[in-house]
Every structure is written in C-alpha cells, then in structure tokens.
Image (cartoon, rainbow, N blue to C red; front, side, top):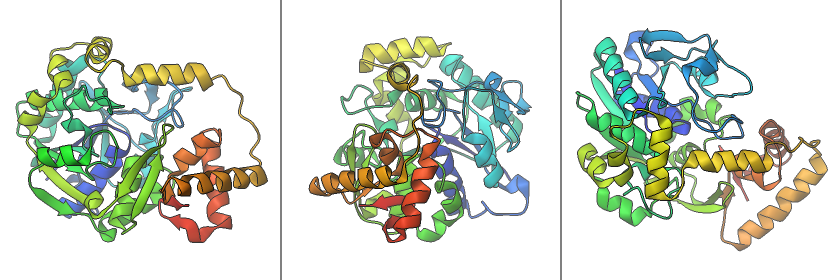
Length: 366
C-alpha cells in the first residue's frame, strides 16, 4: 500500500509531508517499506544550502535511482554535483520515506508527465498535494507573495493529472505570504491538528534543516506561542493554535483562482513559466535568488567569532523584542549577522550551548 504526497513548494514541504504521512495514515514508521509514502518534491533549497539559483535537475546529482523514465528517487547516498547543494539526500538517509525528484525544467507539461508516470508505476492508494503556509491558495498576483512560482507549478500540474488529488494546507499563514483571514475563506475541512507526538520523528531533522515555515509548524505543534521573525525581510508570523492545523481545500477551485497557475498550465519549459511569473507577479523568485547571489555570492566567508556573534545576537534580540517579537529562526539570525550557510551550524551550537533555556525547538526564543 503506497501513498504519494507531492510537496508543493519543495524544501520544508518535503519534511512536512513526512509528518503528514504519519499523522494522517499512521504508517510512517512501519517496518514494511511498501507501506510508506513516496514524497515527490523539488530539489529547491534556499541559498544558505544551495548557492545555485532555482531548482535542481537529475543531472545535478550523482547516485539517483530511476523509478520511471522521467522520475528519479534521491537515496541517502546520492550527492549533489558541486557547486549545487541539496537537503534531499540527508532527508532520505534520516527519514523512512522515498523522496522522488520533481523537475520543472520541462514546464508544467513535463511535471504532468512525471506525475502520471509515477502514479502508473506506484498505483497509490491516495495522492495528496501539501503546502505549508497556504500561498498555494493565492490569486497569484498579491503584493505580499514572495515565492509564487513553485507552488503555482505544482498546483497546475496536479490539477491536470488524470487522478484524484487532495489539496492540503498545513499551518495557514506560517509562510507570511497571504493574510490568514483571506486563507480561512478559502479553506474547507479541518483534517487534523498536529501534536508534539506527530512531529517528534522529524525533531532530529529540524535540528539541521533550514526551513522556517516547517520549523514554525513543528514549534506550533509542540505548543510554542508568540511572534516569530523570519527571512531576510524580517517578516513577523504569529504562532497560534491555528499554526498546527491541517486543512483541506478544493484543488480545482484553487487552480481556477490562481492566475499564474492557469497561465503556466501548458508551459514546456521553466524559462517560459518564469516569463509568465514576471508578467503576472512582477518578478520571479528565481530572479530574486539570482540577484542575491550577484550581491552576496562572491563575498568571502569571514571567521566565526563567538564573542562577536553573541554580542550581535543580544543586540538583535533587544531590537526584536521592542518590535513585539518573541522568537526567531536560526536562518534569520544567520542572515542578520552576515554569516554563511556553513556557519549556521556553528551559530546554533554556540547559542544552544551557552543559553539552552532559550531553545524552543526548533526556534530561538528572544
């Protein structure tokens, strides 16, 4: 009995898909490999992990395993080809699921082909499309959107596949891209409220994985409440009871609502989809990544100076508390302090080692 879960935005959505599998189906830790979900996801990580903008293709890895002519599993022993980076091999090594690569470089038509091949190969008992935060329910042109393309590609592909797909949103509002009030108007049934037990198996993963939305989802399920500041833009996200809830939404309605998803539905290349994204949204998140690399990518990595880092964290905490912020992520701290992705682990170890009482896993309490 195999289930298929499509991680709508890649990154932390793939980790949340592992939580979903255990919470809804209760078989995520079963000893029989055939009774675990296959998680189809982009290899599209933040620049702290992968310095190359945009999603990776199969050619960016060694050690992949073919599942179908156009779908490859990413096993624990797979490696990204330098300079690319990816969290997927480590996820595959630490979680009891099969992670398969969703590749948008042949546009939505290519993604539909991948989905239909995989569905034919697996004959899954269920297919879920999961998004943490809910920006997949956008119109596609909201000024608050920051990463519309990945979700729109997944939505457009799943809406056209010849199979029944259920759309699920975990932690409405945790990505800070659509106002929570607008999201609740577009959500339907409450499917499940996550608990600390549900997220316990991904606890070790969230010790190193940089996803902020899934980190807040985990914290909310563990009972952490307050206001969390995230991203390089310093968005503030409330941590409430609703942050641990999984809702169902109507897939066809979401597709019809999303201008970008409709526009890219027949695309045959990622560059073509990006053009539509620029026309409708005014930008593409891959352009943002390119610009960020151009600004900071060539900067040399400075030494990690613990005393200076602790002083910088203390200054940031004082300023953030004055803004009403109670928590932040290690990714946010890394970027505020001008540290590299590699130094994020050093920062985390330093803070937890010196002030363990402030660690509200996986967030940092200010």
